[in-house]
Image (cartoon, rainbow, N blue to C red; front, side):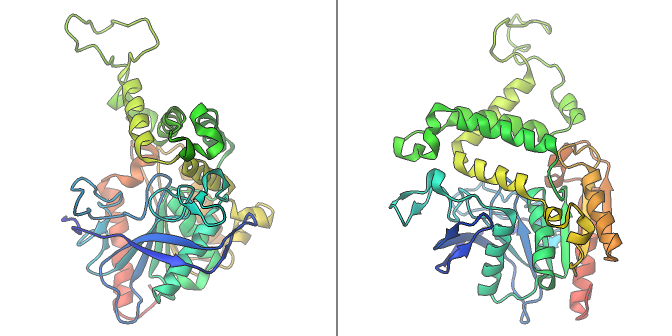
Length: 388
């Protein structure tokens, strides 16, 4: 399918204070966003796409001056694709605290005239949803045809269904969870400690020192990336292959007997870490992983997810992947069970795919076709002027 083509990000400033869940207030902030397709006359065909940890508002298409800047979900959103931009008006919003345009730690704190740095307040999934709702208000969208996301984006979609139940007709939650397990929180904290203990972090104010805590970011990304892949996927791609086995005179079992790179998997992880440290902000990484940890809508209901989802009104599409051990199918089934107990209409897909958590970004035809079929249903009902 063709890409949507060249796209242009937009910004919108919000001078009205935003009260955050943690008690702090952002007095003035800006959101970066992109839109694809056309909003219809009654503004009923809008779809909000929420992004995951290291993604952004750039969901689909490319930038004119960056031919390799393909959007992170370009296989999902575009003309003729599952979320068809010839039918739907799609919005991607960069979350507060990010490093891709919306107000975050790298921006100037109006109270000090210096970058926020570590002074940028901790934000939550619910804070992001409130900010997105304000953007929708400005765009004149009172109800979304669907709010969708994968991983952390799926948490935002789920939060939308609880916080603004009347403002979305469909909620699409892919490879996500209603809360992190202790193991997931542990991985996030190890990654944060790698950044916090980097001497170049300078308590979060490394901008003033003209440095970047690259070593911490590299290790954080390496830890995180391990959790995105399945054991089977890593075995197939890398196994125990040696990085230098192809060098002249090297045998298949030659080790270097030092602490450098021996195995292909080591080389791959270091490459991913190096690349990540070139474009991602350390303070943003801390903020987003903490938002992941804090998300637990059932906490206010004594851990009862059924009660937490009792006020939802949307229909749901929930998908999981068999080898995703970060957000396992059991997590999605917990959401589905709570929705069924509330007599909500739920479509559930559990896809047997080898790619681990990253599967939600990939081109598995069964998965892609299931999403396509669900949006076809949304479109038919929208065209008929009915609730899908």
